[in-house]
Length: 549
Image (cartoon, rainbow, N blue to C red; front, side):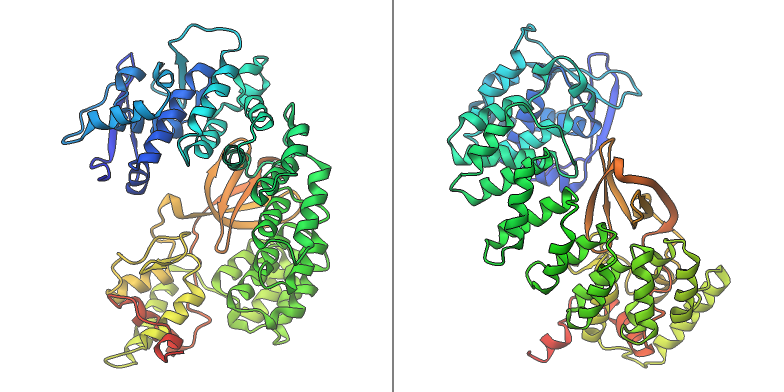
């Protein structure tokens, strides 16, 4: 199926109020798949009988629903026609696959400044409708593989948080989901519901245990399916179960346990910020399968043993693990001091302190750290005059290399070391910053201006934010999503979901996430190699690949 051809879709409610929302190409492609369309249909059609409010993000899905599922009359929406589309076939297919009664609702847009769309049912209100609605339709959805987890997570996430404080318990889908888990012996049904709930509760801690969860925990913890057991334990941990806490600790600490189960246990315990996890994490520094996650996870705990333990084995780690160590040690004042001492003593190379690490250290706003940093790293000047001089200096360094200034494979290795964590080039690299593949890389002035002065032009989506947690951790990254429960921030080496009640402050900087002085630690030949690689029209092998190793 072809992706949608238009970017913005107008939507009108009963009062003919115009609302235009835009979806990215990737979003349109994802939602144009068969399973995506069915998921959209059931998720939005399910909301009205529950009398809920859905977020502006859900409004986007309403538009997709109206355009692709031919449900505009059903939903009370008016849209422009889509040319050359097999709309009748799609509508017939969807209605044959999804319970017809899901499609009897109406949606209206309320007010030009409204941030929500209130869904309202065209069916008469009856006591117990919501609970019966879920119980019946969950089984219908289970017949369409892959839909149910997405439906459940969408449903749970789109519910107005105030809903749980209302007296109408029938409007809350969670008890119905718990009841289905208790009654069902279908492993796939159990997995679908557990996966959906896990996605919905990601980043939340100490959620009140729903009624009836105790028997479900007992039943599913004995399931022959390992994923069912692990997901049940993870959700039980979110609901404050001491039994699940002990079980997950045991799985994580057992080197003979299933690796995926151990990874899930580690993610769950980190998500719950288990106070007894530090000793296990320190032990995992010797475990090659879980070491990276353990290093990153230790940043969440202010344990005095962390810096010494990491620095003691730093030399045995690979490149990405060393970067994770430095990022973790740069997150707290107590960790940063011994790290800078190790740099001063030559135990950590000075050029290992990338510009990102230096910025993180500065964000600690500690005079002692600033003084130590200046001793081992030097002062970075930031005036516009200095930047222009720096650009000219690096142009001269590059041109001093002659007609072929650098070696592209070596330049790719430099890119992998200092740029690839945040930027992708030729489909390889991170997604924190813009993809460089389509940029004007052949222009030396353009490349150097963006490297030397990254704060000249900054799209809002790439502005850095500094988050201070109540236990003293400093996190620098790009805030990708936030609500009243949590904040999702992307750093140079991980994505974190932080509970709101553990955050002291969030400050958006006027600076780009990309730090200045990125080239400062490099030798002249490394600069030439990097700039030469960036100018290439296509990918080149890494040095080891070039040598045939």
